Length: 149
Ligand code: ZN
Image (cartoon, rainbow, N blue to C red; front, side):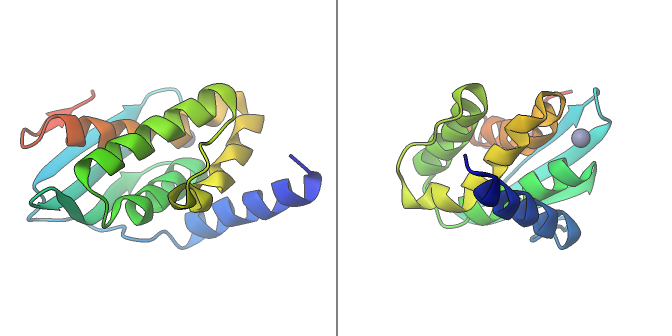
């Protein structure tokens, strides 16, 4: 990755952390999962509303470091409007991206490429994957409410 691209990605993560999208409690969520990253102290709850097989709304709340908040913000944007299977594919793609640095060529993933910049800081990867693990749990356990704690 070029330095210039890395700067753009870092800036995008910063923007999301400063002004996170969909950060709110969702009282009528169909599934919700709270994820906890004890290494950093991040604790986030991901809420999903399902309309049939489509993720109609996504939100999160909680507290955490800038990277965990930015990643949760990006997650809610990415999942909204996807089918359950597409959402699971996305959480899987992000997990693999952190493992080996590659993202499949899919336009839905373009907005998530900025998260790749977090790979520079291996100790922060768990911060970035927290919301994705929670969402993955929520999608797999529908309609049960589970916690990863
Ligand atoms: Zn963190």
